Image (cartoon, rainbow, N blue to C red; front, side, top):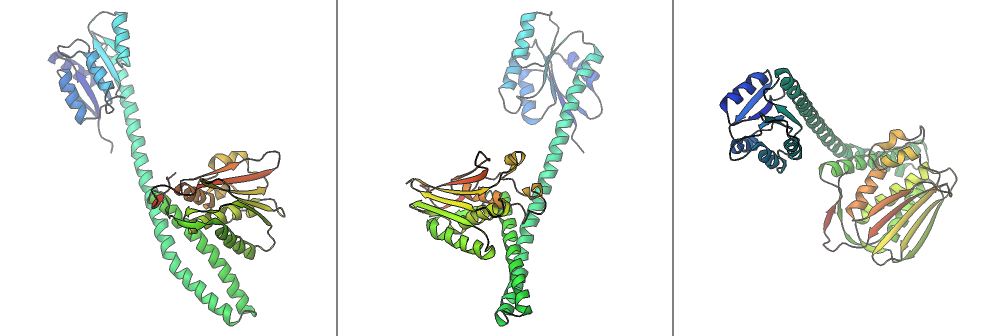
Length: 377
């Protein structure tokens, strides 16, 4: 159940406060009364109010001064203010009131139905704001619990999967050429895919719950890292064509295991979604002494409407049917790892060349070193 809507009434005369209270009193509305600007500020330190009705003419601190102080505080900056005055309709005073932050003016004697209708508008807006905030908290908590469940599930799935893959490996070694050995090979292949999906799930949970994917920076050479990844991809996809070009110094302070994920995801994505039969180009440019550039390009275009959400997790549902594998986390994890290294990853939409190009820029080292975390998206 939502809390009552609070309305602040400020007037130096007791009878005016009683009159306003009688007009605005209702179910779900709590009225706060102050006889001075100082008392009003004390109440505002404790209560969140949906509306403030301020008398213009008060001793020591008038309504305009109180409004300016409210607008100067982050806590009360957005509280709607209606000025109540017995003075004439002086345009200069009205302009001053609006400059002080008023949303409206009411002149005494006040028409009861006008006051109630105006106040009810702000009460309803405040209730809607409360309801939206409540729903946001509930959905945020639900999302957090779901992500915790994914993390625990991914962690717990690894043990039985490792047992299955170990058993399949033993079967394959004992009878590599008969039906049992071939079946064991298929089990191993499926197990490796499942293992990659589980690791992606765990990386997603790390990125969401732990503030980003952690990386351990050590001296590394990207050349052998890329070579190892490409050998694994070629073994799984013998018909794939990958053209590699290298130049300059390919060493730096990076997390070698995480960068192998970046290369595997980008090249695997290019092989999966590029035009069949066309080569994937991979360029390692180490000519810049401060940074290294990795470029992966494939034939084919990404639909323009997908570009804004390309690095979002679980984007797999937007891919053409029959072409989707995995969970749609590959590019999200690439982005998180690159950000954790202090770098950036960009994608160039198709131009005249009819090719999609991903570019990763990695600084060779960061001065403070140690463990970095990516910024959560």
